[in-house]
Every structure is written in C-alpha cells, then in structure tokens.
Length: 118
Image (spheres, rainbow, N blue to C red):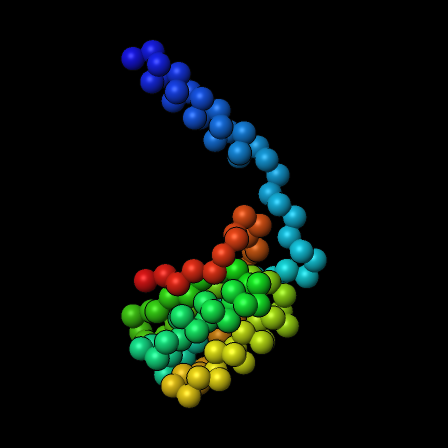
C-alpha cells in the first residue's frame, strides 16, 4: 500500500512540475486558423494529402471529415505557408475546393505534429 501511494504522489509531482513550465515560445509570425472546406473533399484523399503537404511545410494541426460532407482543418504556422498548403492540396485532379471559410484560433505552443482525425 505505502509504495504505490508514494509512486502516485511522485507522479502528481511530475505533472505539477510539467504544468508549472512556461509554454515553448512560438516562432515569430505563427498563427492558427480553422478552415471549413466545401466541395469534392471527402473520399478523394484530401486528409492524407493535407497531412503530407502540412508536414512538408512544417505546419502543425489536424484535419477531419465532417458529417455534412465538408472537411475541417486546424492549421498552425505562418500565413504564407497556409496559402501554399491549399495550393498543394488543390493540385489533385480529384479534389475540388468550392468554398473555404476561415476562423482565427489561439495558437497551441505545445503542438508538434499534424494529425488526421476520424
């Protein structure tokens, strides 16, 4: 009993120390944006193309299909990289972006990758 309780306390100490650390500093000019993409964007490799393009540009975030047939991307990096991201995605002959809504979000300094969700 006593050993596991101690182990538990140590674990909580570790979590408290991690929580007390200041977040990493983001590169200058970093923004985060949520995009709702309409068109022929599901079942055409959009999410995987988005992940590949985002990783090659050093962008972080995520992409997922929505039930209404749209795709949501939340992307973090420099704004000009996001323009390049959509240029690369739309180079596929199967993907047809017909509408794009953008909403700014607060950046996440802890994020390190770009994920496909769902």
